[in-house]
Image (cartoon, rainbow, N blue to C red; front, side, top):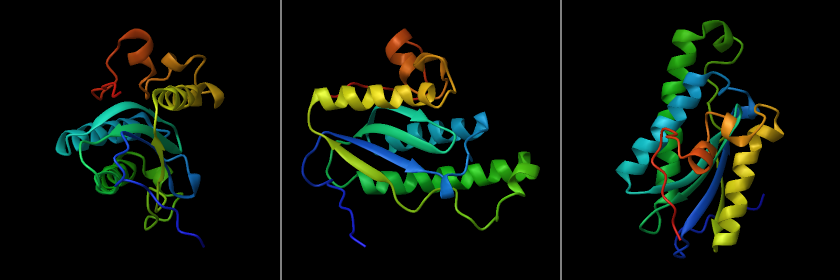
Length: 171
């Protein structure tokens, strides 16, 4: 197996990241689970002085456009985001959604082991990835238009609405 490299030492401005629920299970169907992912995103960005340009939380995966002031921050950020959200989502499922939780092996992780990272080199590619993310809920028939999906940054860009995470354009 070829090991995929994540370039976080090259001075790239923005990272497009994707990570999925274990076995692509719909562990984020419940709105509280999606809110946990967003809350941890916001708190970890503050902890690492990072910026979020955009995001979307889908029932079985997450996309985000992230920027950090220093090299080598992405890997630690992703580790913490996934670790902390995993703990809180498992607690939510165990305490509030027992019937749903009982259909899984409780020792299974919430997230797949890795994440996919793509470096953004220019504004054209940044806009392309932002539009791709925002179109996900429409493509999955979860919403009629991107701003109808309450768990993405589309409402911020289309309506100026708060989305639970501070967003900043990085150019």
